[in-house]
Length: 449
Image (tube, rainbow, N blue to C red):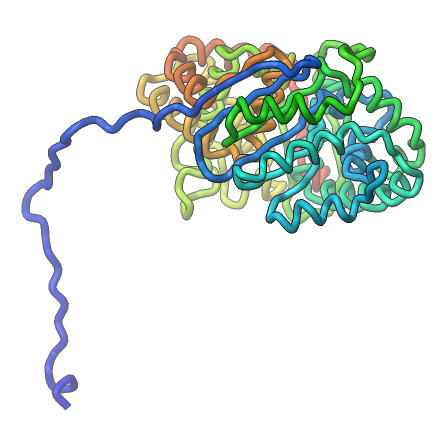
C-alpha cells in the first residue's frame, strides 16, 4: 500500500529571528467595579451588598456568634447544625424542599467569629429566599427531638474534620496561640456534646442574635430590593437591639503542643502573632509577606512548594512547606506549615525560619513586585461566592463597612519593601506557636527551631 512505501514526514516551523509583538494598548487593571452599598434596616440590622449584576445571587444572614463567643464548648457548632429546623406551623422538610424545588441551595456554616445561614439562587428568587432565611434565624423553636437529632451529625462532622491532619493541626495551633476565645475549637467533641443541653442553645442564641450583631449580606442582588425585603421579613420578629454578651479582646500567648499521629506524613505548624483584617494597611502587608515567602500553587505540575518564593529553597524531597495568613477582628495568625517525611521536617522548618529572617533583613524590588501580584491573585481567586459574602459580613459587623477586592488590591499595590521587612521582624519578635503531629520521635521541639 502507498502508506507503507512512502516515508512519513512532519515539518516544523523554526523561528530564525526573535518574534516581537506590538502592544496596541494597556490592558485595564480590573473589570468595571461592582456596586457596593451598606445601609441598616429599620431595626438596626446591617445590610450590605456587592452587585456585579450577574444572573446568580447569594444572600447570607450572618450573626456575630462564633466559636470565640462560646460560654460552653461546642455550642456554636451544635447551633450551626440546628439552625435549619421546624418553624411554628410548618416543618423543616417542607422548608428545605421549597428551596430545592426552586433549584436554590440552603446551608449553614460556623467560623471562629460568625454563624451564618445562606442560599445561592437566581436573581428572580430573591423575594422568596430572604423571608425563608430570616424566619430560620429567628425561629424560637428548639424542639427536643431536633436538638437530639442534630447531635449524631455534629459528632460525625467533628470526627471527619479532625481525621484530616491539616485541619487538626491548624485547629490546635489556634488553641496554642490564643488559648481562649479565638483559641476555642471549631468542633464540638463528644465530651463537649455530652455536657450541652437544649437550654444552652437557647441562651447562646438569645444573647447573640441581636440587631447590632447581625448583617444581611447579598452578592449579585440589587441593594434597594434586598433592603425592602429585609425590612418586611423582620416585621414579624421582635429582637433586642443590643447584645447582652461581653466579648474579651484576643490575647496572643504562643507555646507548643505535640500530637502523636499515625498519618503517613508528619506535620509541623509554626505560628506568629499577626495583623487583624480591620487594620487594612497591616493586613495588606501581611498578605504580601505571605506571597513573598510562599511560591506554592503557581504551576500545576511544578514542585509542591513552587520554584519561586523564599520558602522554595527550604523544601526537601517528600517534604514541602507553605505559608498562611489568617486574620480576625482583633488579631491575626501568620504561619508556616511543613508536611511530609518526618526525617526532613526539622531541617525544612529551620530553613523556613531562616527564610523569614531573610525577609526581615531586606526585600528586593523584583521579589516585592512578584509578591504583590501573587497576593492580589491569591486573594481574589481564593474566594468562592460563599467566602465572599462571609468576608463582607465579618467586615460589616466589625466596622460597619467593607473593603472590596479592588480596594484591597489598591492597598496591596502601595505596600513598600520596608513595610514587608518590618512585618517579618514583628513576626519574629513574638513568641512562636508550634504544633507537631505524626512521628514525635523524629519531629523537632520548638526550641530546636
